[in-house]
Length: 281
Image (tube, one colour):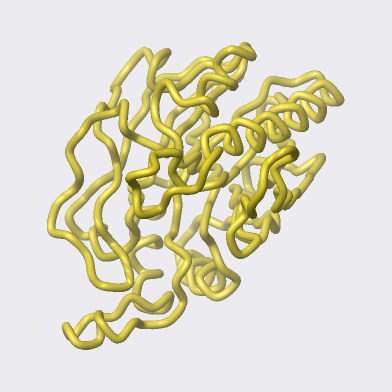
């Protein structure tokens, strides 16, 4: 059985250098940070990458850099949540993109800042085995339910659950159309035992961290990297505080669950890429 390496990676959508970084003699533009992502993908060689907080500018730099290697990636356009895939290994047989609504029915306020929260789905056929699976990259609402938080927005937990319910319904629909297993990866802005994660688990999805049979990473996988600068270490707190996730349906074996958090990545993005090797049964 052939293993497939899947990854989720939030790129921190920021195309231009900021005054604070410039004052420090640093550069956080897409041009400056893209080589870090190229290095990650060249080292890990994922077969499929679900991105979040991407931009056309960043994607052009990344694809241009990767074109210098022997690996060729195709792109499924998904605005902030595109999917990169190995063109030599997979055919795309279906595709869907959706921008989450700004409204959360029955609640006041906007729940999609800058129209950045979305999903992208690709249905892939493995050229070697002929096996088919659906893969979704998503990014959902980010603010906090805690009134003491600087980012407080009432009903944020519920809004995340609502958005992920829309995503899962579509993912199940498209997987049923092709009679195949399915995967969802992304930045859920939601930790363990959250409404959003519980919705997925209560509706039959399995977290890669929980079912991996090999190496399992227990870190949080985030650190400070903002317009004001970046930190010199990764946050503590462990897996239960992580917000970047990989979940699979029945019909998929997970061999590992690994966050890639090298020192060189600290000024690249505030989210460590997370990846798993899987087998489609």
